[in-house]
Image 1 (tube, rainbow, N blue to C red):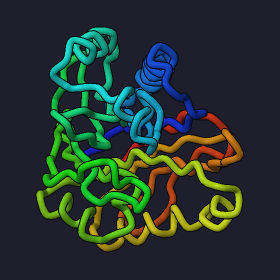
Image 2: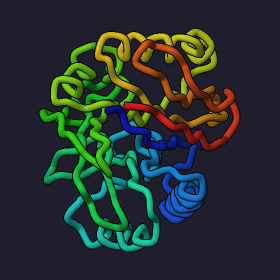
Image 3: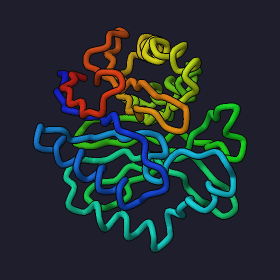
Image 4: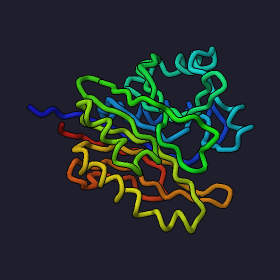
Length: 245
């Protein structure tokens, strides 16, 4: 018998190198999602510290998951009821990773390191695992942004018995590229859902910064490839959607 779950995703203005502001926004949007019944909330790729591919800045911003700094971040999230998927820059020894952490009431349930890196992300080390997570009976895995370009990444989630792939993304691009990709993002994601049979929940940044632009999109796509719900392009917003799996 199929079950109904309420999931949420946030389309947010980009925040760079301001943990206090990022956490304030995460708590605010997660609280609003909880008020509408959401049990899972997704935030964009690297949202915690801000997406950056310049090595010096990335190393300065990176956070070790075993550090006191990260423990303090978890403490600030203790009052947040839904399970959170938050993009961040992770430090592990000398390696840096583009990571999504899964957090429930201030406890780290696990993390997914981006397996398939974009050409401009060479300073990061690729992940090698595809962990599965479960919250209140909903089983899900994670693909981070560029991982959606290849069928194998969503398939690795589906073959473990998941019903949903959660996708933190960051698509702040030069205006010409942003215009070219504006409609392609969801088209590619819809291909992944049709191939894998998964629901897909994506979260992206939006707005303009340093001559670049991100339209979004933040959306829920069903296993047939239909966009069920989407935050309007170029608007900050919260998407809350029931899915039947």
